[in-house]
Amino acid sequence: MSLTKLPVSFAEALDIGKQFRAGALGLLIYDYPSTLTVQVVLQLRVYVLYEKSRRVRLFLTCCWVVEVSVMAIFIGLTFANIKALPVISTSTGCYYSGIFSISALFWLPALVYEPVLCLMVLWKVREEYWLEYACFWRKRTTTLDDSNSSKLVKAFARDSLIYFVGVFIELVINTVIWSHYNRYINVVVPWSGALPSILGSRLFLRMREAILFPERYNSDFYAGTNSGIDSTVRFTGPGTSPPSPTWTPQTQTMTAGGTLEASSSKTQGISAV
Image (tube, rainbow, N blue to C red; front, side, top):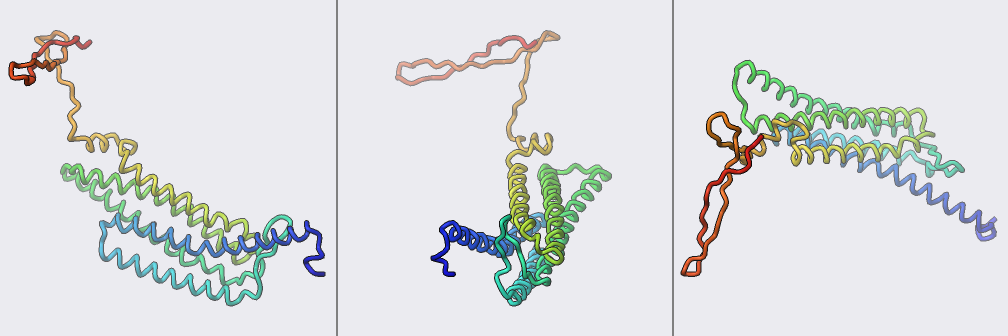
């Protein structure tokens, strides 16, 4: 039976099914570049934490190249072994079938590389704690820049740890589903894009918050950032009488030459209670 002889409702249903299948396959392909993009963002954070070290940059670059190469190999094997479009439209949604089992190894490079990045961040925090511990026992005062840097590193580490734990759990679930229960891929695939996006956005926002609103992390850090502003109120008063603030009003008088002259006189304001 040709498609033109089908009722309009059937033809529309077939068109919708084709759209769903194309969208599901596109979402599968989207997972690959989105995963790599998140990796680049995390590498930049680690690179900054290590003060733009050349060795760290070389190490991260090599690891990233290896990760991309392995992912590309598994992607090629997956598409080479797909005999038909692995998405079937059903009344309850899309059903993934025919996924090559080895395609589950696509998540393996990220499963290895994510903990490496996490350990590098935690190691940097460990160095900061050692520095504070040494300064405490040597009774050496730290500078404002050192204190601010330490607090920022700790904030980065805390947020990165939350990200790594969440994404690592998601990667493990994806690996298990893809390898043994590929009929449920449609359940975990959306989270592969949503979870890194949510947690990645949180990393950026928290980093911006740590810079713009440091008082939310530590009141001492906030006080130090405004060290150039003197907001102390000085009181003057004789003996033991309640102190009163000094107020210096400015008055302007017109001279014969047509210019203004400013003069000041000290008066006592309202006594402070």
